[in-house]
Image (cartoon, rainbow, N blue to C red; front, side, top):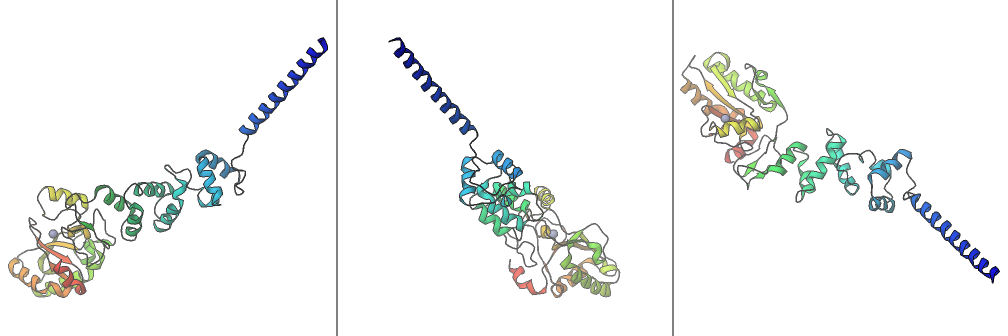
Length: 304
Ligand SMILES: [Zn+2]
């Protein structure tokens, strides 16, 4: 009997030891389990980053679709990074070369929070900057909520009215008005300079002096400055809807040297179209508002 008891005890101890060894092995195996064991592409650095930034689902995703580190690893540390949006990031990166990696990810993630955000962003990228697109998505049009964003804001033929806006667009190709022989300090679009110079040459030949005594009072005005002017009642055309924001509008006045300002104004209004300008009346603006669109676009822009 004594021997049998001892035998039983030995067996029990053996079983306990076996169980203990099994548990220990299981525990260690678990802590050392390598979730990237089926992901053959990583070097040490990629491995560390993947383990730090990707959860198990994301790791399974890159394994299942064989997505290699060089496709996403340079973006993985950007705040808001989402492995499922990498294709969008890469597309944006090709289109918007002026943004940093962090900015690409931030832009993508914010646009994705809006309805049809990705499609909208992609369709606007060729004409608007990333900041302008986000401005439009965030704010819409505070003045005419039904207004649509124009597709080609920098076009000479762009028509702005209550239905069409360029949001807070800053046009490309602004140059100083000194390019057309005026005193510097006002910006206009470079496309206007030749025709404006020719118009001034003719004005000068008719009335004498520099540009026949025509002064340019305003040219390009930014969205923010137009907002102030609009609030102050200095122009009736709201920001985003005001031609001054395109750089294609100038406000002009005449002195009375060599002829009365009335005569010069009448001459101007009769002759502007041959130089690609039309007159537009913006209520509350004290000067003669001229819009440049180029001769070919006159009929179209006049109607707008
Ligand atoms: Zn004006």
